[in-house]
Image (cartoon, rainbow, N blue to C red; front, top):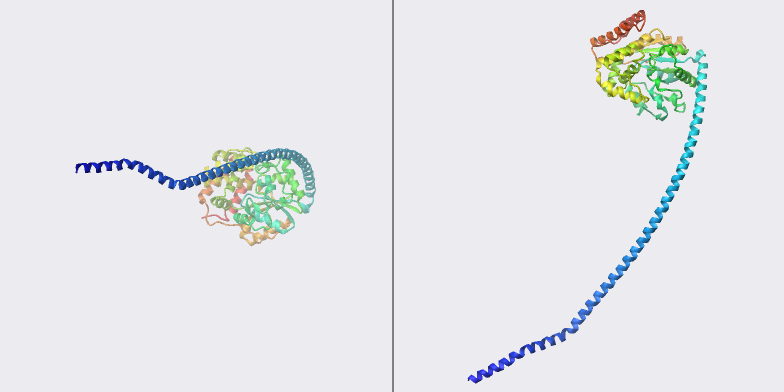
Amino acid sequence: MKSKHVGILKRTGAVVRKIPAVGFIVWWIYMLLNAPKKIFLLSAEKDKLEQANNDLITKQNSLEQANNDLITKQNSLEQANNELNTLIKELNSKFKEVEYKSNEQNKIYDTQLAIFTDIITKECVELGKLKIKNPDLKPIFIHSIFRSGSTYLWNKFRSAGNYWSYHEPFHEVMLDLEIKDQKEIFGNPIEEHTKLLGHPPTDKHYFWEYFTINKKVPAFRKEFIFDYFCTDTDDIHEDMENYIYFLIGYAHKRSVFKFTRSSMRSRWLKKHFDSVNIYLLRNSRSQFESYQNHFRNGNLYFHTMSLITIGKNQRKYSLFSEISKKYGIPYYDSDNFNDERMFYSNEVLPKLNTKDLYVLFYSIWLSSLIENFYTNDIFFFIDTVSSSQIEKQKIMEEFKKVNIDLDLSDCRIEQYQSLSLSNVEFEESENMVYDLVKRLNIYDKEHLEKVDEYIKYEVLGTSRVI
C-alpha cells in the first residue's frame, strides 16, 4: 500500500515537472496563431505613422512655401513703400514749389488789390468832397447813444428808398466785416437779432450797404470805435475825416449815417462836414432800464460799452477821469478790440452795482446832451414824439425844413412801469454827476443851467416813477 502511494506521487511529480514546458509550448502555439494578426496591426500602424510623417513633411513644405511667399510679398511691399515715400517726397517738393509760386502770386495779387483799393478809396474820398457841395446830397448824421430808438429812425430812412443809410459807421464789426455771413448778425439770424434787440423788422442785413463795398471797408481804423469818442472841434483826425468822405463818395444816393458812438464828436463832425445833424434823445431812466433788461438776460454788451467809453477816454475828458477814479475804471488799451471788450466785461463790470452802472451811463448821457443841446439842426426827443400825434407832426415838419420827407406816424418807444432804482437813487446819481460837471467847469454855466432846466421839466416829466 505504501509503495502504491509512492508510485502515485512519483507520477504526479513527473506531470508537475512537465507543466512549465507544456505552458511554454502552449504560449508559442498561441503566439504562432496570433502572429499574423499582430503583424498586420503593426504594419497598419507603421503605414499610419509613415502617412502622418509624409503629411507632416507636406505641411512643412507648404509652410516653407507660404513663408517664402510672405517674404516675397514683404519685399514687394517694402519696395512699394519705398517707391511711395519717394513719390511723396517728390509731391511735397512739387507742392512747396507750387505753394511758393502761389504765395508769390498772392503777394502780387494782394499788392495789386491794395493799390487798386487805395486808388478807389482816394477817388471816393474826392467824390465825397464834391458831393457834399451839392445841397441835395448833404449827408445826414444821426447822433445818439445805445437804446435810444436810433435803429428805428435809421430804418425809416432806408425804407424811404431815396437814401443810402449806413448803420453804425464806427461799429467794431467793420474790423472784420469781410468774414461775416450776410444772413446773420453777430452769429444770429437777422430776424432773431432784431427780435432780441426789439428793433423794427428789416428785409436786408443791417450792414448791407457796407457789404456792397466788396465786403471790405477801406479806411476804417480801430481808433474810430472809442479812442476818438471824445473829440474836440479843433482836433485833427484826417484818417476819420477821409473815412467819412469815402462813405459819402461811395453812397449810391444821399447818405445817412446812424451813429451811437458819435455824441461827443458830433461838433467835430458838424465842423468838418456840411451836413444835416439830428440828435436823438431818450429819457435817461427808461434808456438805462433798457440796458438793464438786456443785462438781466445775460447780454452784457451795453453796460460794457459804457465802461469802454469812459475807460478809453478818461485821459481826454475830465468828467470821465473823475468817474474812473471814483469807480475804479482803469485805462486799458489793446490792438484787439475784443480784448478790450473782454477786459472791461470780465474784470471791471462784476465789481459794480446797479447804482454805479447808472452813474456811468448818466455821465455819458448828460455829457452827450450838453454837447448836442444847441448844435444840431433837429433835436429829436423820442419820448414826446412817440406819445403825441402833435409832436409827431411837429418833428416831421422839422425834417421837411431840411429837405427830409419821412413818415414818423408809427414812432413808439417803450415806457417802463417799474425801474431798477428808486426815484431817490436816480436823483442822487443824477445830482452827483451834474454837480461834478459844474465843479469841473467843463461847460459854460448858462448853457449848463438851460440843459438842467430842460431835463427837469421835459425829460423827467415823461416817465418819472412815483
